[in-house]
Image (cartoon, rainbow, N blue to C red; front, side):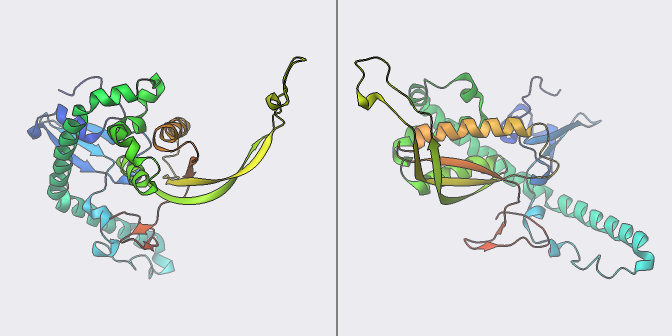
Length: 293
């Protein structure tokens, strides 16, 4: 039986703990099928009582160059007179190649997923040992912060917040890990941002001193900006505004716990897809094929 009351944003590693190993199969739908909230895209119950879990994770098929599976010039030399029929025929061939590639890599993909489940279980054991310290440091979190999925994934790093604070490299690694779990890619850069506070404040009373008066201020601040590459087509749906609220809440959390008081951090949502990364150097998308290795 399918467990009841499964949260919509449940992580696949956690969901697999509900099922006996022989009772499920996993279909990798690719990151482009994953919206801002669902790691598990769909759950289908089969006639034999097993479940097919469709997850928004990349298969090895998605992570390898497209030309390994499909002809790159398939649609280039179609005669105009036969364009409609030939295009549909070639498209069906490509979809069959895609389906066969998913089937070929399915055992390997599932094995790698199970390895990630084992790592997550070990990580949970490690976090549990620090739970008392986490609860003490994060005692002042609001209910909204406690249910924020980005903050929940970051709590494991709270015992090391003193070490991470002020170290941009460690902070970037932390954020990349958290956002990678959500299928999102980030890039870091620095900008000088002009902040304005033009609301004057005047001291009341005859005995007020001049230091209590405030006439507003405009100043430039060097800000660390993380661009979040968000899938910008069908996934920008009605859940997107909730996603923005969660990001803003997470930004304040990171600012308070992992940055010094002199530093400013900002998340910027990008509508473009992240570039293909095969090494430390950025390589542009190949045939509009996006992946991260």
